[in-house]
Image 1 (cartoon, helix red, strand yellow):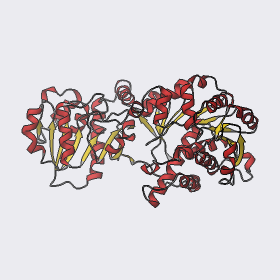
Image 2 (cartoon, one colour; image 1 turned 135 degrees about the vertical axis):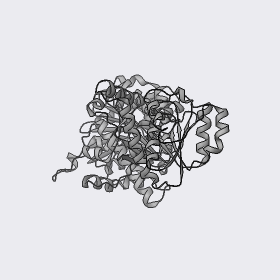
Image 3 (cartoon, helix red, strand yellow; image 1 turned 120 degrees about the vertical axis):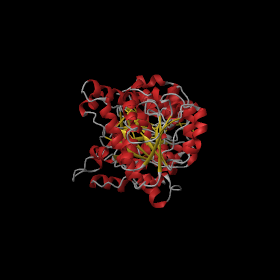
Image 4 (cartoon, helix red, strand yellow; image 1 turned 180 degrees about the vertical axis):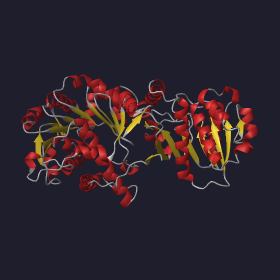
Length: 530
């Protein structure tokens, strides 16, 4: 499913008006009319209740005027609170504002803080709010009168319907620009915006309706959204049923280099998750002194004891043994539980440089490579990096706060810089391809905030690569499967307390439903407007 940034939707609007000849007023009419249908679906019978429209001076306010007109024509009690003087409204918004007068719709001017104070008793009479203050073009913190009105609406605890996006949210990042409206539902136009789907915006948007306003598909395709929302339909298309005569030799052999003192569980989970994802064979390379304890917990996975610089720590001398393991391997996963000792770091850098198969890099291996990023320019094979926000910050030479402030941009920057696939983990995991395309995964829940979840994801993605999926396809499918398995556990057993090992145990059921074409998947509520 396509999702867009503010600049992309603005370019589509301009092209529709200038090249295709559909007037802006028609687009505004379509937007307001479609939003009313979604509004009524959410709130139903509102007779006897007062509807307040908080309207800004721009086109978002214009959409609100159209909504007010249609609602008034249905006999509903609507008042527009205009956060400007009427004389300041221009263009298509002014034309729609003028249409309210013949219908007797009250338009109350609230142009400044003094007027806001004087009108608060009237504002408080609204039972339901329509938020048409700011649209998707907002790019500065909300202050002054607009901030006061947003705070008032939130404090009123009245249900809110947002027009296009809750006012105060960044359409590109989902970040709150000072303060933002908390909506029960939102009607957005043409496409969902990135900010609707990333936190904290996802928690403020409520039910999300996408309303067709008449942007021609050829214009949308030409401008080309560079973000996608992962859906069951998309990932289903990447899966192919196994041939009836498939065997372990035809389903890919994965090599995992992982584990260290106190962290053998990371190695065990990564290797086992790859088997759960369908890899035909998995060989796990671990420090030699830890091999007996690892082998006692693994039945289906083969092990390869590797040379140590000291007990429980892989040394550079293990490289020869690792290179002897390369033949026949379709993928390598490296990093979970390894530690960052200098001898281990030398091994990691050499392995990533020299491995002839695609490499999935996680955890300590990421931290090692963040210190020597030139390695990314010296590799022989495709790479998939799976950082959490802190690791991503180290890879970019940035901060965790900066990464979280714009997750798609962070993932895209790293992917394009080194020509690699990046999986930025977290709430709404982001996958970025070397060409700059970004996918946002809608699944997952807070119960995944526990140890081992990232190790399992590494194994799943690597297991999919081993079976022949390309790096981007494996990353997209892997994050979808991982989150969906966790969501099913949360629904059945509660929102927290399930373990990473149990997530991988739920994978066969998710595979089964994908193959059967079922729709019992945990997606955010993105609905097509009527």
